[in-house]
Image 1 (tube, rainbow, N blue to C red):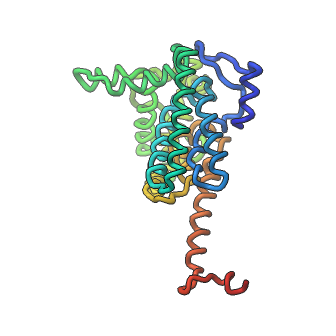
Image 2: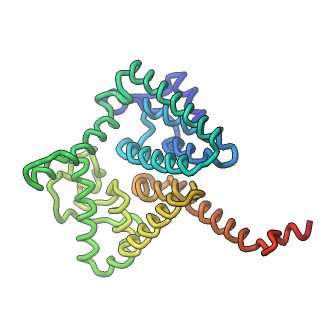
Length: 305
């Protein structure tokens, strides 16, 4: 997908949808492509690293969807990559990676000088970043701080609060939730949920019954109840475990990032579930391989050969 996006850009196959923000007309799976840098130390690692860097540079200038969460995703990918780099002991490879970082910074500098900013000032990603930074504004009271957050963040916070109220008011939904497509009414909140063309679909606004809360935690609670909370706790545990390992499984890490941040956004984009399953299979398979080793260092296959 990354290399397919290059001719799209060269042929001008983009469109403006939010102010001056330019979108690439490509599948949304491209959004996750920068995560390929995490596979640097795997088979064909250099190719994966270069592809991930190209995807990152493309997304500095062109939006591929899910603008608000782009910042969070790139932050986590960057932290995991640095962790992976610091635990790698091959000096020559580390030197090559440092040179690669210098090249990326030079390219970023060119983009900044050429385009003015990574994304245009009136773009959606710029808007989402400025909205997120309001969290750190100091206000005289908690109410003033919350009112200053803006509708985008307020709606997401209120989504979590309202689905919790919803499942507690309906005990039959507390344990297992309401299933896929579960809905909730607005019990509390300061933001306006009934703006047409904004957060919720017109049909939801018409009936004052809401779903698709744009925040995975809220969606998991309304869909799966307390069972969903247990599930997401397990996911975070797996993420932390793989992050702390020197040889952590990158498929599990990318899959958990998808599940925690993108589950509620696109139900058809179930790649994250497949990544988690494949990563867990790899872990299980490698564990079995280790257990099959004999005390003398030979496996059953070695004896046969």
